[in-house]
Length: 315
Image (cartoon, rainbow, N blue to C red; front, side, top):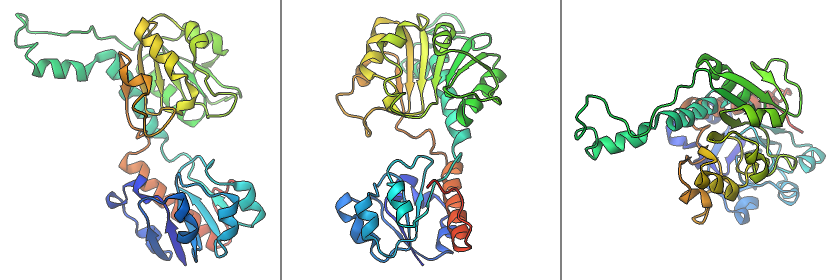
């Protein structure tokens, strides 16, 4: 069986154990694949592994040997799943592989914005503490999380994990979702109430048409003065110019984002010059454990397909 990975570099495969894939067939790894090369690289492939490389109806129709598509992520919007279904090609994803990792990254942002560790470390290296006559020194006053309110927009698996961690810090947790989530470990309220009452807001909703630009000048105006905002979901959930303006005006005290509207980030993105803005490169999911989980679960999906019981089929 021929297994082709079109954009394996996103996983940094040199750090992973790929033996579960190699045990299932002949594995061809491509770091990246330009859309013009996709048909050529799928020629003769039985299974294709893709993260962001798009598989259109035309591409799928031209891949005569293709029997299975495995998306190396949870989201599968890059694959024409309708066309795949019509062609009899199952499409499998990897649900829940990074729940713990993404939730952890939320608190990396939140703790940085409340304790300013990177800033203080840099200033100490510049001599600020050495020049202080007291034994203790700080430039920005730390903020205690206990008894603050965290608003979680999107109460699914990741949002629920974030809520549970917040409660361990002693925070009150409010949640908002378009659908009821009985297991969410917090009180579910309207979006307006969540915005008005939360000291920090964390985004965990999908990038649907309804949610595009959810955080904008209008919704930011409903938030507390000096609130913190964290986005580890999708860049399209926020109007970045509005967030940058709110940071500059002090309406928002901080913004932590792992995702932006265009990735890699554009040099003209207003967040790059916004004060109190903390950015990471869409890597909240990328712990070694999470990436190995992608490999292992994908192998299980391929093995299940070979046994007539494909797993995690989305079409």
